[in-house]
Image (cartoon, rainbow, N blue to C red; front, side, top):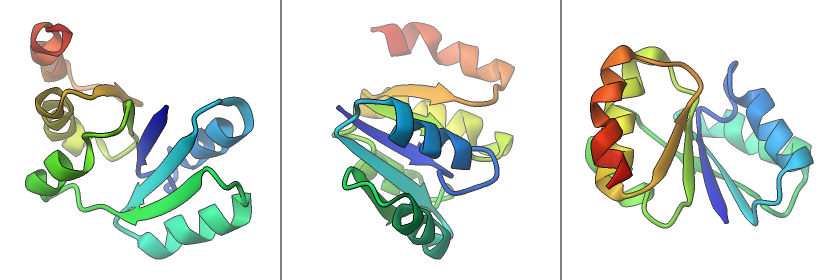
Length: 115
């Protein structure tokens, strides 16, 4: 299984990435960051062959729709202002999403996501 961690080198999901390396059996863990240098530093520090880094711009919806397919899970550790757009992109891409925060409007996607 493959997991994509949005903001995976940031203040919130840095520990999520570390926990995935330490405790998960994902075959691929991709750290998606606007600050690619920070993501690459974390990948180097953790030194796990399952890890890689990719540039990610949460303001570019089309890039989400290109990136998300192929992953089993997308973990969103971005600031809350991106919660809705990431949830929408996960649903549209047919990918399971997990958000470390919440926005009550996200519940509006629940029925569609379950389809």
